[in-house]
Length: 64
Image 1 (cartoon, one colour):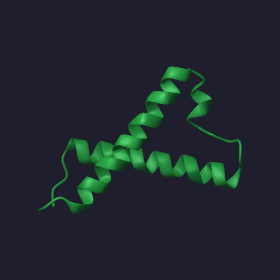
Image 2: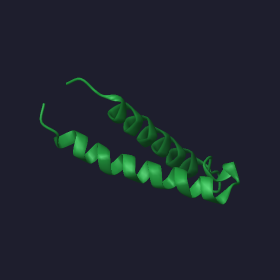
Image 3: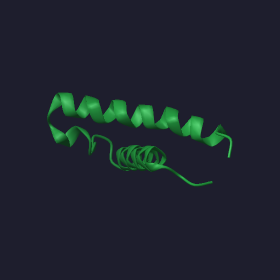
């Protein structure tokens, strides 16, 4: 199945979110996204990762 641009963006955001959680699990208190230190930008990144995760669930069940 060929992936379009939205598929790739969603997958990249989910990987970024997963790596961020992994780093936090290894070293609690270490949050790469929170290091952006601009509250609206941090919230935006978290929202985008959440939306990407929801889209990825859809992507898993999408017909070929």
